[in-house]
Length: 598
Image (cartoon, rainbow, N blue to C red):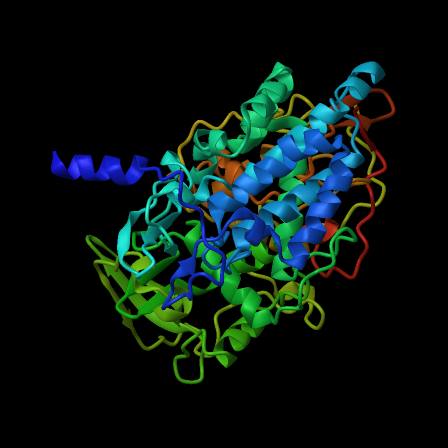
């Protein structure tokens, strides 16, 4: 009972007479971060500049802007203080969460300025609801990461003398309301659940937004539903509002990581390749994209070493960085190994980057080629490390059949012939990119598995791709990245037909059309250990490299125009042709027989 009483006291305690101190009132000791008021937190010149842009873009009258926009921003600043936005990814320094929120508001308002919302609305309604939609965009951008302190971070509060007064409970209110709190420290919780913070955000909104602001958003139920879905991370229901926040979030992340070439935001300092590779590895491990310590995992932690399946890890890392917008990522795994080794991130095996090993657990054993990384390079804080593998990783000498210099990798496509690509089995014979192939005639007839059009499987495709019925444990978390790498290899080696009547890939004006679900079924049949085709499709969509339709749905429809009939092809569009044909010297021709169906 005493413990319960103490917990309630710490969680619900309030001291209305206490005001946060400014930075000069408390000299930070080891790792202690002084509590500050909102005015102090928002006073730095770079934040004032962003606030001025936000004021200009919202366009609300002065008193309304102060109460409905600037007020919540001040509350948010007081709530998150100088917490980072991530442990080892974007905005990972002090104040990162606040800076990221302000940047996303700014970018989202710029994007909103070019949109007529709601989509399909009458001109009178669009004009009448202009300010309401602008406000929804601003508040969704501000609050999109609000749940991180509640579930991803552990914040310990301290008195002026440095003594701990307990752990902050964000659900109970801001840390500025906790009696005797003058400073805090922050660590990250181990084994965090990816995306969980999005589901918690709505429980914290009342600490930031005024009641009349929420009431204004709720006055339009359709808009309010999109707003709530956006905060919860439910992009299938978030519609146009979710797209705006997702795009703005990506721009802020890319700028902070030194990636992207958007004219809207000047990139931050150029980050060297080794730093981007290390940050990407940390992110993939933190998000569970490279699962650990089980049969079929991507890696195993043993003592002070992290062992990663060499090709799988580097392929996933490359796909992740490309999806984030980074340029200059080597297509050759050997070049990536060399870069990591030069900066002490990868521990070599003599002169080689690759270790030939036997990985053994309870009832299973595999001979694998791994890379070896000191744990301290990934997890700088010992408390943040995952548990160790309850098995063994034993280095061994390679036998005569194995390449003792390097693992098989894709060549650097600027200086290697195209026939040196990996040895995955091929679903179709090699074929050049077809430049003028007529659509199937009535005499040809459709394939048995295609009742809608060339290359389209008969299984139904939902516009929102919500047909998945398999759980997240069906296969590896990086199945989407593995699919993308497989697609690139198959296309580059010309083992996959392009622009032919039964092709899985078509080049269209908008980019590259992946016929779905047929192409995912091909992959799943060749890689049964990666889960069902539904699971692979789901993980691929999470890479967010595809282009949505104007109505927010994922599946594009194209008319196949023939001499005597028309049919329909459905699939996913990748706007960047280089995602499928990286570095190809041959310009892929657009299929002249496909026309987008509005």
